[in-house]
Image (cartoon, rainbow, N blue to C red):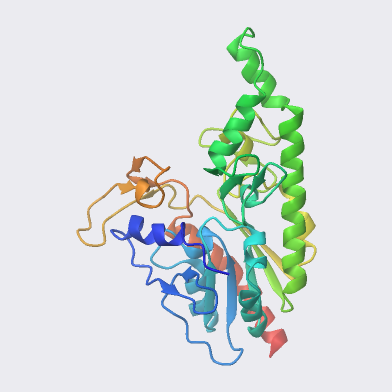
Length: 320
């Protein structure tokens, strides 16, 4: 299968001022991954699998690299922007590589990268409407869905918002539940395919028991806006889904951190604060920001690596 590059190729173009990702193309799949290209001898390495958080956007050293140094074992970083679990199921050669290593660190990825009856994700966040074939971002796709089931305009705005905070439109709620069921099934299929021990890794500014936006924290699913419905990364995913897949893994590490977040973006050439133009990643991202207010900061990457290290060291002892 040809590699889909709309995310990763855009990351380097967008982020060149801050980080050189040393991108390389994998010969077997055509996909582009963060470098430097690893030198893997025999099976003496481990694999990190995930999305942009594992890739390490805006971070000179993502957690796979930090962890590799801490435990003294080479790493294969298969972080791919916008990926969900079903993305990796499309590439058996990547799974073969996971199975040749000693163990796998598997990130809890977003729920919005999963397909359902309305949208085909291809395992990525950029969706295709099944009825029209139009390609659209997940934010726009679900925002349109919410608007199709809006409450009557005759209702006072504050009342409409309050109702949607607690009671979602039944068709939207059903589609979200279908999406989450598919997400769990994709993780189960991926875990069945991975024959080596798996450490499931959660990294977020929120606990899986809570939902969160830039200004609020809550414990139920809201439907008053697409941002509220998704919540902070990993979008849509809560404790129930995490528990379902964590029970099938050798270990589970939960890193909830806001250290260094949001991250002021500084040019590696001048040392000066330099805003990022997000349209260099994708044309539908038309905004400029002085901060990374989405991806884990370098300090958050350090926190996850520190939590993973003792777990992985114990697995290495048991595998020796």
